[in-house]
Image 1: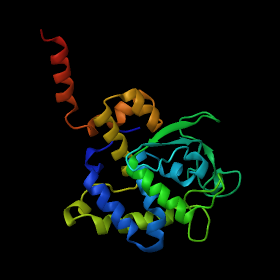
Image 2: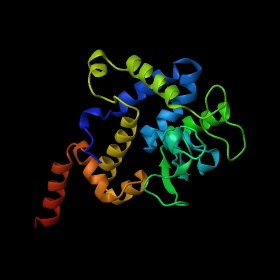
Image 3: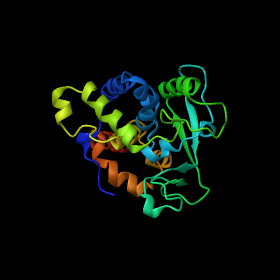
Image 4: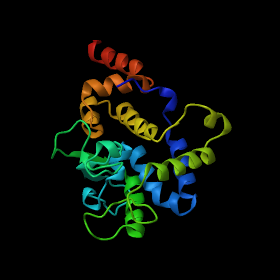
Length: 228
């Protein structure tokens, strides 16, 4: 995997602008607001958010300042109908870089907990196996559906200069922002790699340039640990 261009990574204020713009785009936008929030706050890949089921959301506390948790089990990557047994463009598969049956535990940011609770109440039936996100017709979310909302919300949320830049040019950039934030805030690549579904080596290779101030912080820690 190639290193992420730091220019695509949004900050928290830009992310909130984007999510608010998505929610304002009618019924499709409302249905996908938490979909995009999962990528930004929990670092999910689009194919993981597409395949998310109610039973994967293992903890959604009611308190507004508590973290939740999810246990990911499957993804639904786009392979093309020629490459799937069912003939569908997308087909359920194991998580990326994981063996069949492996799961991945991911914390749910308190703000995302609230968005998911509201989304489940409004759009998702009570069955544990119910998809968290679906189209207006009740089927799986398609690339066409979420890309349309993404680009319209980006145009509405960003300034002219931001919109003309590489900033969050594709939905996957939301995941890049999440993982970059985790690395910058936690400083623990082993833990972040586990949440993101990467090896530590790949994580550091892909995201090293997206952690501003990391070198200065590292030098400060070395100085603190070695000075008398």
